[in-house]
Length: 109
Image (cartoon, rainbow, N blue to C red):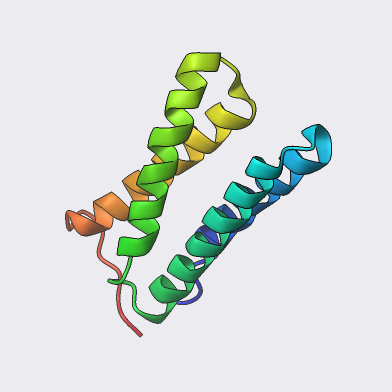
């Protein structure tokens, strides 16, 4: 398996969302959380690139984001940004969860 492009793309999307939250609304917490979670997801994508069976950091971070942003979406009803991030995070949880359950096999380098 090569580069985990989906994982890196997801990490970049989360980080860019935090930056956009800061630019549009001046939200320092959005900037901090976006960059923090984006960085953790980037490390997770790198680890998955090195060993496809080492997906736990990405899975855990995606699950936390799905829960937190899903709750924010439920309370606010606003799709942007909470609903989008919750949806993307849920997709990533399913992606890594399928790997963990053995539904998808990925060859190591």
